[in-house]
Image (cartoon, rainbow, N blue to C red; front, side, top):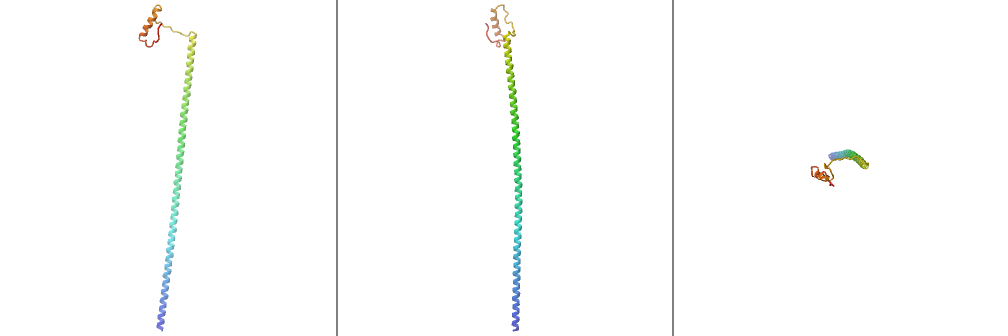
Length: 168
C-alpha cells in the first residue's frame, strides 16, 4: 500500500505540476494575446494619428493653394481693371484731341468764311464805289475795228489757253 500511496502521491503531484504548467502556459498565452492586442491597438492608434496628421497637412496645403489662387485671381482682376482704366483714359484723351481738332477746324472754317464774306463785301463795296481798276492796252490800233483783230491774235498766241471768252 505504501507503494501504491507513493505512486498515487507522485501521480497527484504530476497532475498538479501538469495542471500548474498548463495554467502557466495558458497565463502566458493570455499575456501574449493581451500584449499582441495592445500592440495592435497601439499600431492602429499610431496609424490613425499619422492619417489625421497627413489629412491636416493636405488640408493646410489645399488652403494655401486656394489662398494663392484667390490672390492670383484678385491680382489679375486688378491688372484688368488698370488696363481698362488706361484704355478708357487713352480713349478719352483721343476723343478730347479729336474734339479740339474739330473745334480748331470749325474756328478756321468760321474765320475763312468771315474773311471770304469780308472780301466779297469789300470787293462789292469797291465795285460799287468805283473801286480800283487796272487798264491794259491790248490793241495797238487807232479805232474800235482793230480791237477784234487784236483779240483774235492774242487768243491764238502762247497765252491763248488762259484767255477764254469772246471778243466783240
